[in-house]
Length: 154
Image (cartoon, rainbow, N blue to C red; front, side):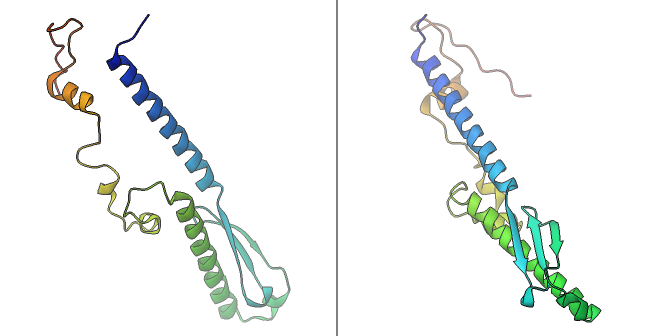
């Protein structure tokens, strides 16, 4: 059974959509795999965080923390966690780079500072045939035949 150019074009669009969807799944997997670590001075503390910046592990490789005042240990812990989170954010931004619209910074997106309007433009890019279909409905099968009207918008 042969298909019309219209049907072939729809199949191409669906194939493209499926490839992009698969790429997004791979991107999400790579982002979830991100882990980052930071080590405090004198190896007193090592912190590992996941891609969301949540603390996954805290290690005390040496006994240096035992000689620290509580305030000093607390400050070192907070500072080291922040360094690990900054590294994780940079790693996630690197994974995202190249997958965002031009002019959108991955770091700004992760910090909640990006204009998300750029992700979904007011009018999506589409082929002329699709624009024609949206405006006028699908052409009938015969030359000059009846057109199939587009469904009403709810």
